[in-house]
Image (cartoon, rainbow, N blue to C red; front, top):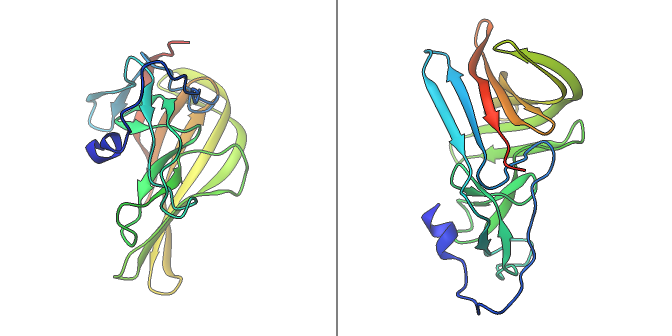
Length: 194
């Protein structure tokens, strides 16, 4: 993450740069926080930085050129551009792709990874308008992301788990699928600074 921030240009103080504001299913406004309980009963806190950060990166879409600087929120150390964050490809060192965290369109592949050992993983928007309860909190307008993996040429494919994002809240739950579905992380409180 330090490298991502070091890619920012030094800029003149009198220039005005646009701000990339958060979207409803990832409302990572500066000064926000989310408190979760993990499967061991421990408390985990996800936070945003207190201010928008001026950021740019070397984009694959721009054939390695640097994007124009914009102010973005920073959540869990990641600069957030709407529903995505720049991620370096292991095959194109120094070039960043937009890694989608969540999408409002059912069927969208939000993540795909393949390594040189034949392992691959992907995430897909499974549901876009559902509801769920998490630790006695009820949420409507929930998007569910299904995480899967495999190895070889489309062999041993397996559902690994789910991530749940609620409108105007963000990430509310992560489930793992082993022999049964169990909650790995569930929200217990949150503060959206908006």
